[in-house]
Length: 134
Image (cartoon, one colour):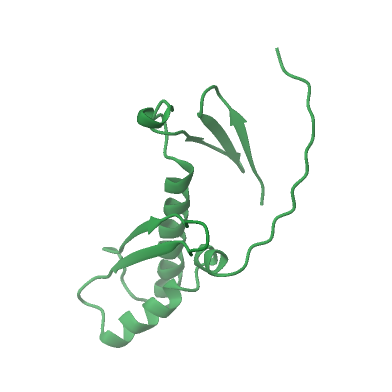
């Protein structure tokens, strides 16, 4: 999996992911143009969409209807020496049994983004110098 960010002036970036392009920026009050979600907002979007899709895939295999599923997340980015705090709300349809709800809650925690954020991450970084484009 690969993502590439291209500066567009100021804090605006076009991000290429597969065949898609996304825009990320900072709000005007922080010096950006507000033309897209912030990187932190994209992280929250990744978490809620991955959680929802993971739950839907499981429910589909079981024949459960999750048409009214909503996932909400709020988080505070980590301060030095403190963990990032996520608060996630799983909005599940009323017709599900308590057993189905319990199983879906377990499945929600197994989404790849959730597991990535919960686990230890390792980074390898390098610098490549490139000539400026005209």
